Figure (spheres, rainbow, N blue to C red):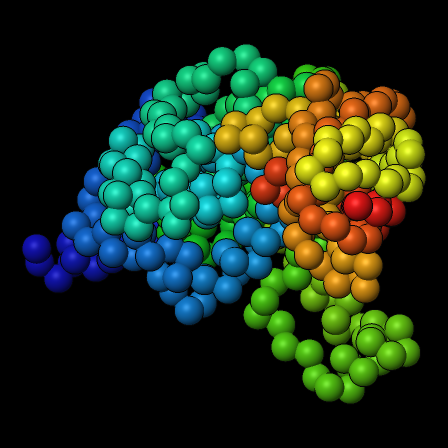
Amino acid sequence: MDSQNFGVALEEWSRLMKEIIKPGDMIARYGIDGLLEAAENYYGSMTDHSALLKKPFHDTLEGPYLLCKTGMLLAGLRLGKGMRVLDFGAGSCWLSRFLNELNCITVSVEPSRTALEIGRELFARMPPLTPPLESPQFLEFDGRRIPVADNSVDRVISMDTFHHVPNPMELLREFFRVLVPGGIIGFAEVGAEHSRSAQSQREMRDFQVLENDLHIENLWKEAQKIGFTDIYFKNFSHPDKNIAYADYARMAWKRKIPAEVRRHISESSRQYPVFFLVKGTYLPDSRGTQGLSHRISLKPDRLQVGVEKPFTVSVQLKNSGSARWLHRGPKEIGAVFVGAHLYGEDGNLVTADFARIRLDKPFLPGETGQVDFPLRLSRRGRFKLVFDLVSEQVCWFETLGAQPAVLDVKVE
């Protein structure tokens, strides 16, 4: 190429670098199928997968951001053990692996077949520390329909993914379809000016990765039309902000937020929103700790029995919390039992988990019932049996503030 032609080519390249790419133009040019192909090419062109396999610990700059956002997402989703979670746009499936460590059942959905293969490799090389409740699923997304049944997942999680799709409202309807009634979808997303950033422009220009802007007010209007009933947010703060001691002292002790910190919080909320949509009426259940409370009384509350002689305690129960008590669960996770701790006359613990009996049915908030608890004691003395409820592999209700009931027993 001669110098004149080279100069013309350089000018054209410079013009293209300065020209703002609009997401709408990307969608019109490539369409859904073209953008799906670009996603596969993006992952398929990578010869070294080590960074993807290490995510979110692959980068000292992006890692803290991802960990902070992930924490907000997990907290806002109101997760419970044994829940089925759809990880949309799962990429290398690192978040799916985290969810398995939390005893969730995962369905990883991703348009790139190569990315899903990397995800399978991740699970094979670094399996969860405890065996999954069910084998993780890895499903390819065709850009239009999520390949799972209606009302089949408890939660959907979209980690920095929703702004990449060219048909967001169609996808939002799919999220609604697959969620169970009362299910929640959590988004970690971008703001209304995302597409104009230098990184977004480069991603669109060099890799044909769609970088949409997200206008939450418009999304919420459409979500309500689809049937979502509530939206709420987590107050994410980008971790790149350092706070001086004087500013920290004013916030922590004088409850005054300095202007610079207010600007940072506002900018984080605007540019990196973490928010949640609810399908129908949300009702927590005993797979998580939220809303677990009870009232217990005993008949009788004191007793005299013989050694090894069976006796029965009538446990009167009321669900005084806001969560539904389950009586079954995968590997019993989240199933509620009546449990008893055994204490000696001196008040010292003898056996922490002395006996348990399963509820024979689920209990809704406000519901009452009775459990007849057969017991026996094998040695003479005076004892206290402390009755509480336990959600299997989740918690004892007393740790959340519920008051157990006490039976005084004399064994002769």
